[in-house]
Image 1 (cartoon, rainbow, N blue to C red):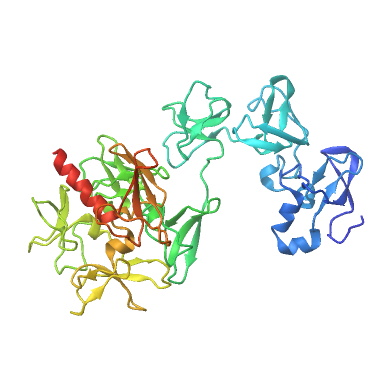
Image 2 (image 1 turned 180 degrees about the vertical axis):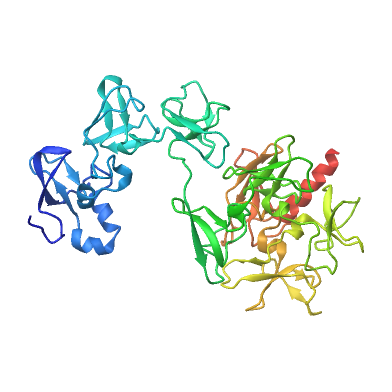
Length: 489
């Protein structure tokens, strides 16, 4: 069989188009030709791989007689497995008869067709399987979905159904978006938990970073801290999901001295909760009590008893906090029932300071910053690179060991916002509050309370009227929140 410069046969016979043979053609249309197998543009796919582009350019298999049938060279001869019904032959049959999928046989229509898949509820544009009598259409990839699946975030098995009922209003247990009950989804018959079709668990790949640089400025989705050198897990399907190796091995259920009941690990992406130990809001993984409204972030539950703190000589233990007891690291009064204390002296430590990361990434500095507890600090004056205020050399601060830059812990991490992802929103006291990123422009807004322009992220408070927007830095927001709590009591 003759082959052209691409290395593919000049002419093939394809089971989707048995009337005429397919020849290698060149896509010269202005709008682009769509591959009827994968649904992508012929030219667009070719441009993704420069090496292949030199050979394939904008060529495809097509029918000269019909003029409306085109396939990528690869899709015609070796299609990807996710669009293949028979891996051994790399073919989708023209007719499938699966009573568990649909009561009638389904016919393949290898054409450009705009439709909504009855199995997953998402849009399709090419080659659906169709039952004409029932107006039933599904993607080729949805023609053989697993009937039952398990996902890590729910204890029960989930079964696929083609309709939850249009009267039901359910949110997906993974992405938290609404599920259209007219189309297919996975659900539990025991408690009504449901997820979109296609939210089966993604695979995590173990990666190893050998230098001190942050991985694309990524933060661990569990603890919200930066991911540095060493082993970490990254999702092979998503660009924004990454876990420290230790965070990927968290226990599903635990018991800790901070709470009398068993705690269960939960994660709802983007959902904000308040940690009962450090009083910080977080969008990371949380341990929650099913019997009462208590939540803890993963850093606070990892504190051991006794706890070895680099800024104090003696071991620290979990002790009930006393009235007006101050943290020896930040000098802030603790409003929580538990804190770390020394049984030999009056030193106390709040959970926010106990869980400070030892290594961080700061702004655009290429070097890592190390936590300094002040024990080796000299008597000279230190100044914060962010707020340009003086730094107490005997308290916690972050220091770049390569260039000597000093920064307050609150300025470096965002203070009480340190466990929130940028863009996180939550409602409080009738206001919608959103964490907004740093703005390098001169229009960076001032904190309403301290009347200063901060270099780190600040919180935007909105009452629903675009003309009534207020901004607070992390320090002022936390102090304001505590003042409101005292007033209410």
